[in-house]
Length: 72
Image (tube, rainbow, N blue to C red):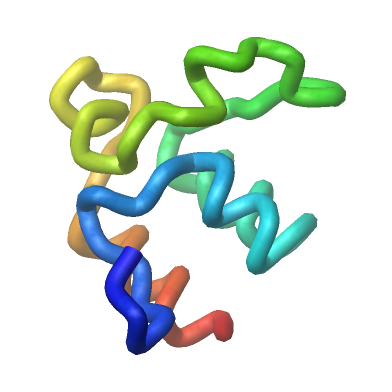
């Protein structure tokens, strides 16, 4: 993630949850990414938002990034 604190396609799912907590979890879910309870899948934690979109686990990456950056 860039030093200016904005989320980018290269931001990790883990970063979203760490910085935005339940709001980040809700935004990810709204865009098709269900982190589940406890989020124990370590590999998914380190997945980038771009990779999640490319593998169809996430919809509308640009829209999600806009919402994540405005939620900060």
